[in-house]
Image 1: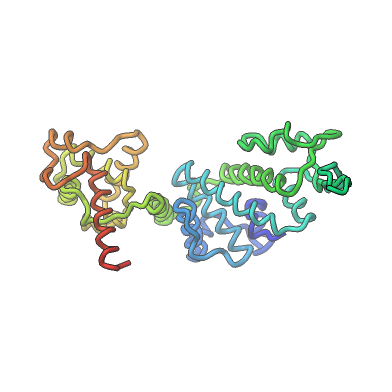
Image 2: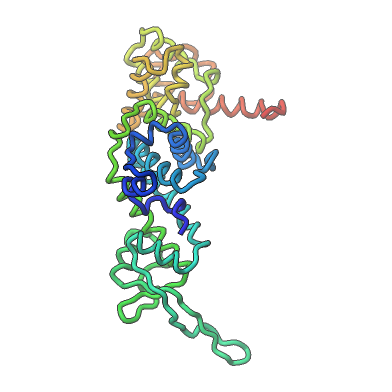
Length: 343
């Protein structure tokens, strides 16, 4: 079994104690620049759909990266934990294709699914010569394990009615076993996440980097970039007022909801506002943006912004609200770049 593809099958403390001679903690992992960088890359890859810049090259790196990435994801939010769990479960399921039968049975056992060899043969087809061809089903799973494994799988092909059941065992081929184990892997990863306490990372800067990787990944997936020169006039003026410490409640609301919709990071806001990333105004604006997103607050329409005196130059906009105006301007800039033959 190539454990680097199934890091969730081992306990972090037990694994590190056996490999390094001491039990590694999340704080240790967070202080390792190489592991921290790999974990941030995993988060960005999970959200953006892109491949990470570098994959762990050893089993130790793979296990440590998995646990730190999972803890960071938990610090960011439950949706990221679920996405990361699905990603790791999918990668592990793909790796099963290259495992031999003994390894697959061992992996299944570690994931909590009892699997045994089987040589059950069933009639499958009749050839033109009249001979009946049989199909050998190589794996057998006790019925209780099978039902537990497929619960919440959402796959009709795994429903019990579509399987061969005999003597309290469900007989499956390798393709179906891989799907069953994919569901079991996801559940095991979520169990690992429940055991982790992000507070043990003790590295606020790394947690913030994880949030930024998450937000950058979302924008990448949605095709949205952060471009100061494309900001609509009302947003530019609101951010300028915030930087000066002279923003009204309306400007704070408009800027916060806009940033929440676009997903700007602390470093991007720092550059835009001309303030340090850890300044109270940058942090406060990001906190407002997250709170607005969590409560479902939306960006003012241009009409609403005008009524509240927040629209300094409405005639220059061609969309009904600042967010869509921003996307329109990004699109125009992108087309202009392509026409000039730049990348």
